[in-house]
Image 1 (cartoon, rainbow, N blue to C red):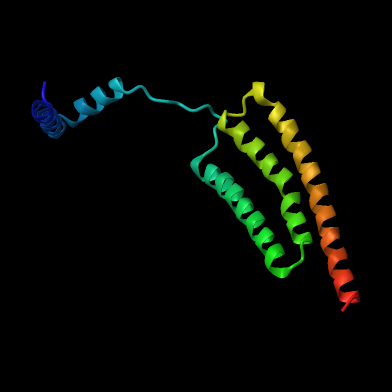
Image 2 (image 1 turned 60 degrees about the vertical axis):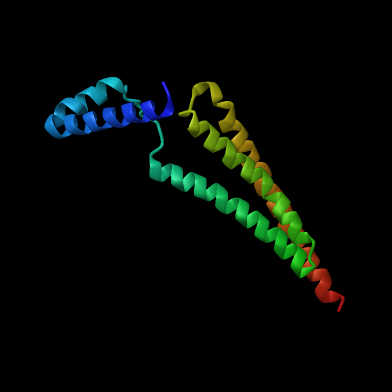
Length: 145
């Protein structure tokens, strides 16, 4: 079958489906419903708005890390770059959470929950250390004019 014949056949099939849908709308809906099995998500699946919040929060965190890094470069205070590095474990924790939710909170992946908790503690600690280093750098720069 050449390309022209295939195009003619497919357009004819499309026209036939359109006419059938107009004449017998409920029959076409039933035919499509039978032909395409419905995918039912588990009850613990996240809703689309919840996914939007999860993904946008991760993207926002990555942007914040980049902005903190740029501020460290432009201001001359390299300690700000340390804050950007301190944010990395928290990003890892967010990725663990999103991965676990992507697989519908599977019991076989519950290790991700523990990893998220550990990365959160580590990330909070590294950000605290980085914040102290920023404080110390500003204190030293103000005492040495």
